Length: 78
Image 1 (cartoon, rainbow, N blue to C red):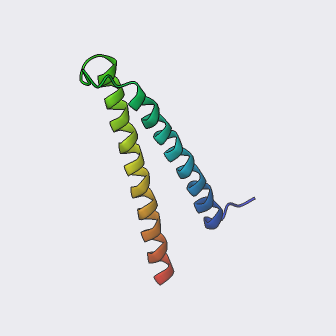
Image 2 (cartoon, rainbow, N blue to C red):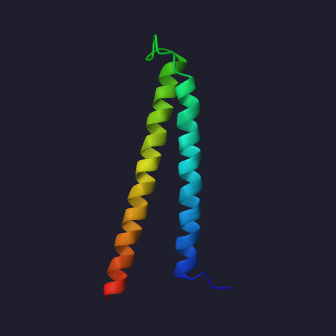
């Protein structure tokens, strides 16, 4: 069975959605772990770093989606 570009893009879209949901869940959980009286000490710092990492992951996934759209539009012009 050969995987077509359409199936590949569909599977990538589903994976992208799943990864964004996981990242948003991590952000939500880690917000509850922050001690707002001392946000840069102990486990609060770890929570802040994890929130930043999850935001970076979402940003990278959006860049991937945009680059695939650009690639698709360039291929359709040829």
